Length: 442
Image (cartoon, rainbow, N blue to C red; front, side, top):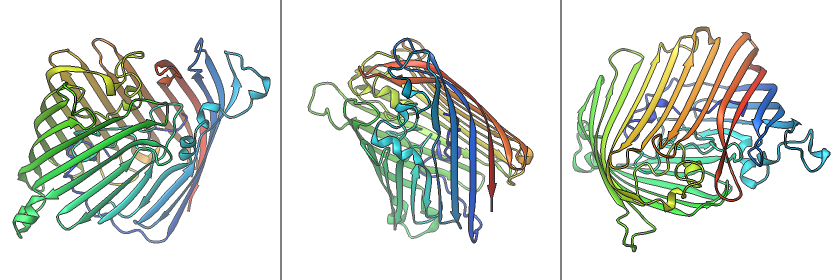
């Protein structure tokens, strides 16, 4: 797409269940922002000979923000076919919207780009739209998930979070218009139950996660259910440093009666440091024992493709893959450097990787975002690498925006895409786009 990946806050990726969000200064009044991007895009057809098609793209957007408790953005990229290297059946298809962008109910969800009701540090919050790197709790089941990864599937998801006493409940739907991935976490703050001292609060966390994918949307895939039980304990917790120990056990919830040992266990450590003002760094290391048809981070960055082909392009769906009993090492890193002002330099980076000892499999996911001083240039990069050693699959997207005038900017996009096929496998392709945009706000 000609639009950028919508990146989630990097600092919510590593110690997901216990990062504290500082209170933001209150904003009053209603603010509006309107934008229109136009340009051209070359995109693989994704079928047959897989030639490159050319589209004219118009992307209107309207955003409204009402203080710190409410905001939304509407808009959708409209791709008009200009050139088709695989001739269409009728000439009338030229000049029309790309059919794959609007051929199922879920695709109309892309009109809602973003919705937020409630503050980030409030007791209740609802968010809806695209989720490009979302994790449920500590990420033992749903980890860095991207619900709009497929170029032919554009759902809108929703996330509801609420706090009540020592409990925290989080509910998630990857697609509110179809029977797709639903997940939830119930987290209990043991410190608030066992002690009335503030020093014991938010230090000992017990969580239960469940997730189920009905597989009906964005292509049909086998259903998949999983559950996990996790415990996190803060060994060190102060303004400059946090050190957490965590352990979890997980299992497939839909294959327990079968003979395959579909379960796993994990133990790890998370460190978060703020060595300087406006610098925030988080690291996570974890040892895992898993096998059968269960693995941690089941619903990961590349899940929208893995649900059709676990690795490669024409292999078994993830729900049916049998993993030999193995140990694996998982690592994750997140960093943010910002001087605080909208006109200042800001860098955010997040990466994760897992190595399976028995099979030698390697999975990697990385995000980089750069905002140069003066609001002149913004660059974003997302790379998802699956099974680099045997059946590799690569997904990548990059966008560069440069502002020439206060209300005028140019943008360049490129990426490697994968297109789900009716037979259930995948076909790889490329995307490249060039355009200009105008915006204003009041």
